[in-house]
Structure formats: structure tokens, C-alpha cells
Amino acid sequence: MEAIDALLSAPVLFGLVVAACLVLVARAVINALGQLPSLRIQLDTVNKLLSSVHDGIPQKRTEINELQESVEPLKEAVKRLQDYNTALIDVERQAMREEEELKRQQEIPIHRPAAPRDL
Image 1 (tube, rainbow, N blue to C red):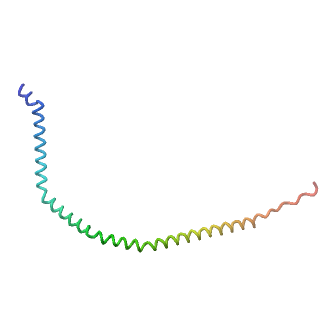
Image 2 (cartoon, one colour):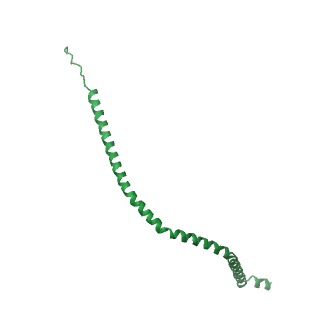
């Protein structure tokens, strides 16, 4: 019984847990080292792609600036056309109101019957 109690004591169990953790860590490191060459190839590929994209950034920025400069007059033209459209809509509404008012004035002549003379 003393041997079983000695094996199940806290320091022995703690030592077993630590040893198991060390084995798991060593196994993970060995697996990572085994995959290192393929990961290095992928890293080099990604770095090349990143470098090519990074080299094109200044050109894209100048292209964006040129497009923004060419769009600016168009924005002003759009604003003028929207203002003109708004003014036309207002004029059309005012004309419709005046026309309706004119129709109402023509349709509503009030005819009152003459008062009877007998009363």
C-alpha cells in the first residue's frame, strides 16, 4: 500500500504532468520543424506578392489623384444640373397651383336664388 500511496502522491503526479507537457511541447516543435521547408516556400511566395503589390502603390496613388482631379468638374456640373432640375420642378409645381386656382375660381361662381317677394 505504501508503494501505491507513494506513486499517487502530489509531487509524483505533478512530475508526471510536467513530463507529459514537455513531451507534448517537444512533439509540437519537432512537427513544426518538419513543416518548416514548405512553410518557408509559402512565406517566400507571399513576400514576393507583397513586394509586387507594394511597388505598384505609388503608381496607383497618382492614378487616383488624376481621377479625382478629372471628377471634380463633373461634380460641379452635376450640382448645377441638380439645382436646375430643382428649379424646374418648383416652377412646374407653381404653374400647377396657379392652374388649379384658376380652375377653382372659374368653377365656383356662387349663384344665390333670389329672395321670395311673398314673405
